[in-house]
Image (cartoon, rainbow, N blue to C red):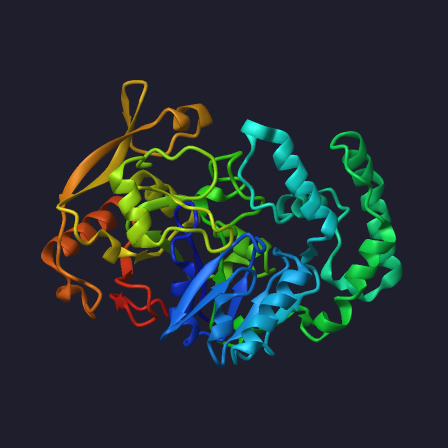
Length: 427
């Protein structure tokens, strides 16, 4: 009964889309379990590049059923636009299933996200402005609107009225913005009912039955471990749980049914938005990583901050997710460096610290302690086995594996679907 969780082991943007797509042909269901259209996956199939934001990467694999779980927040306009774009490119999207319990991102959520971020000024979090946080806040405050509410106009109107009672006060009195009309929001949301009706399902029952019948289910996280609202670099985090536990609450599948947890790990480190980043490079090496790696956010279009590999973060991801495997991506980007530093510990107040500090203050002041490994100059994009990698590239992978605490079972040596070295099977 193989059920796998696949998630980011750093600050997101590790290449989860490529990893999910690689497994897509071997699994029956690919399930997004948290986040919204603030996530971005780039998948390269042949000479075609696909940028996915809300849809599970498995939608590109024929025979695979893509599922949006109850833990996801759904912007219906973005979802329908993304489906339309794939349909125009000949991708079959008819198998998509959406949990009726998933919460909706409404126009007032995106408005509040943008105005509140501007209001924070220098203290801003660096959100994508897509309404993710306000939608999750409404969910926790029990004033959220779910996908199933689209099909009952009376309930929908009651919920919108209740939400805007408070939000219009905030918009007018705190942000000096115009109130949002209830009728306008209700009318827009009702317009999504018919286009989405055929996709909505009891996905919790479906997925549990599928696992019990021996089908393969892959749970796909957005963002990354260090952006988890509970376990990340709070408050510079997302509003959901990308860590492995989120796969259970975000789908209704119990933890005893999950067999493997795969962490996607970039061969260096990046992050988007504000927040601490001990190995960040503000020099030529950082710019070189950004340029060669194409480090620009799929969803935001923002340049990613770049730095050397951080083994402290990798060990932390192994621990909080219970990782069984790593998928190391973008090893090819490091080709050409004579020497490659790797952060093995931090210095905090003159002391060596080898595990992620629980204190936000300590992490902000953490200085990386590096070990330097020999680099390589040979092109590795054509390598099909581990032994075909240059010796120094092999040593780099082995060192990262030893430092990180879980086996590296696959290595990305290029952006293409077939540019992957499989060491151990995930299934």
